[in-house]
Image (cartoon, rainbow, N blue to C red; front, side, top):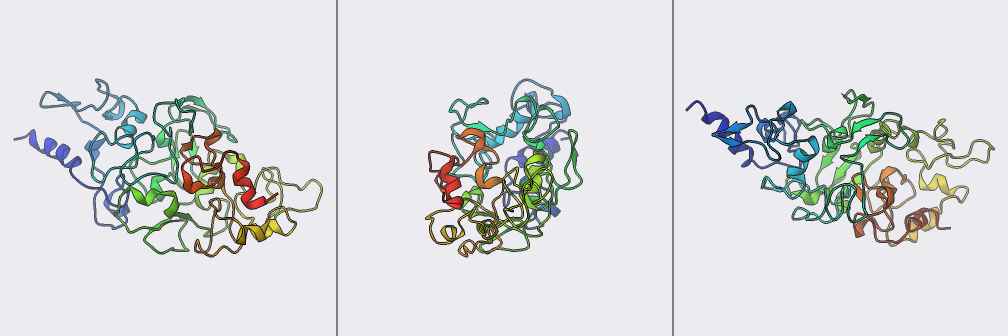
Length: 352
């Protein structure tokens, strides 16, 4: 009977159901605080075989770090590309192609919208997952190979979607951003950076674009999802007036030499951008039938000009079928948006 406890753990790994998308979290880090959702044997194997059968998902093994797949990417995709493990409820399908039931337009987009492998056969552009010798645009460090765990902590943490956060060090990167706090429920919580506007435990529909709302909590350089992106893309985010950004926290200025070098992503609202007519705040509040994603300190229905553009106004974090993972037009129409050009997004704010 000595061999059975490990086999029992292995079987339990595929029978337990994850709660609230926190499958990679220990009990004290889950939304309910009561359910253990991470089981070591789902990703690691101590001996590589059990009862004469291989415990490896892909390849022949054994592999470094006791992984059950040949690479980190292959391990992640075993569950997150078609749910090969048969988990219920299904995990988010981040790769594209055949999405998980209930998932049609994920907030982060898809690494390859129609499936395949990088470079994506459908022309979509992903977050360079699996590519080697990659230097993030606007950054300085080069990764030998960029994988899912450069952004997500596979063992779970307190941050939204297990995104790496303050104090973590991985592959030469120190994550100085704040923990990206979040709430789950049908009402918004203005003290959290991200709100999932569905009830906990409803499956992958809580990752749909329509129910993921980004909030402004403290206006700091490290706050929220933009601060997380800045860790690798340092040149592209910062306070107005910073060396890498130019401009002003009040929007545009008339001072020569103080013009914006890069698009504001943190501390300029639509109202502030409209004071000198660079943004069309009147059109923003009353004109568009749809609007790009913004950091919105109010409820979605209160369009009042306090909204702020940020990284995900224009890009999908995982990727889209547009250049650089861009969103062309209405983001509710799919990972690449419903338009045909980047100007379809720009004109919602600028209305030139």
